[in-house]
Image (tube, helix red, strand yellow):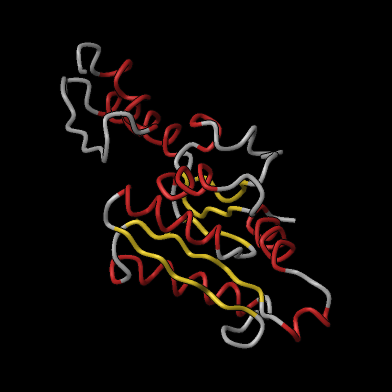
Length: 186
């Protein structure tokens, strides 16, 4: 079984309930988004398509409760709101959303789709056995970014500096680059 299929199975299991219960109440997914709905429309459509492929139809056997915030403090409020509303699972696209959802609940399953370094940040115990209530697909940007820069240095040994744009200097990728390529960067 491929990892993507496994994650979909886990997400499906979190949404699964007896047939009688499904007839009474559709499963509820709390979608926690950092930014605007327009900026992540492609991710939302991919989620909907994946759920449809598994037989979940919005308005029929699932409901997706979307919450969007452009600042982290508002995101925290929205995560707490989803927990109070007792959604069945929280879908958090990246580490930013995962962290605020993790702070809001230890019981509701949290599924992520593009986490940069879930083990390094401490959101999961390991990729093979995440443990707790958090699981998903990791982008493993920390390994890829370091390797990409290593290849660049081999291909162009005369290059002494490489620009790097990070969302935050404490992001997982910045942590990999800082000691390796910019020892004095703070």
